[in-house]
Length: 324
Ligand code: SF4
Ligand SMILES: [Zn+2]
Image (tube, rainbow, N blue to C red; front, side):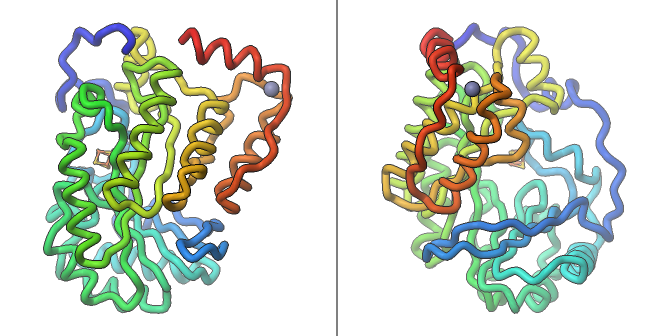
């Protein structure tokens, strides 16, 4: 681990580092899009994502920037179905739908349970509906929502890292055991789950970042997860920028993302995706960047190894990885 962070990392320190949140209309999602994703049965199909405008998450994780597009108070009853209806009217047809609310779908303060039936009727033509949840908020409410749904329910859970001290410092208020318990609850109730795994959270060198992302993939699959998404950690939420300034956080390299994705796919335990959003941030070489993004995108879709990108930067980056 890199040098210790002297300041206490808690909710108030994390919040004190923040800038302003964006102004949002609680009747509209703050974003929506359709992308291709390989589904569990191997078909590459259109997946819609609606980024719902919702109350800020009840947790305050160190690396999270989702608060920027949230409201300070709970949104009124009926607001979430209105947002979904509006977004669906604008988007091309897709087979699968992600309803991401910048927090936990099953959080009491996020989405009123009274809205579940209306949401279920709006999404009935999809094959799958994917929502996010903190492991400690997985329980009977998931089953009540699942029982109203025609599509199959899938729950996305942030494992982040299985490094015990770093996970604690992330202020996620959970342990790997909580994660396992949540996944197990879903599995015994025949609900599929996916995990978010961080590549190089703070307090790790590049090689530690790669090592712990691989161990986190192992743990997620052993826990019964069917799909993992590897997310390179970014600054931009205030707290991460402060950690970057004092040397406790550095950007992971795109080559490390390739290495972790290769490892995950080679396990053959389930789907593994690399988050390919804004990868420019993680590249130090203009010559091979496009090729690497293409490779990662193809590996995401095909779930198999693609030919390596050969570039002079390989050697340079390999030596950074070893020495970081
Ligand atoms: S639980 Fe998820 S959404 Fe909530 S603060 Fe943590 S990372 Fe962000
Ligand atoms: Zn290069």
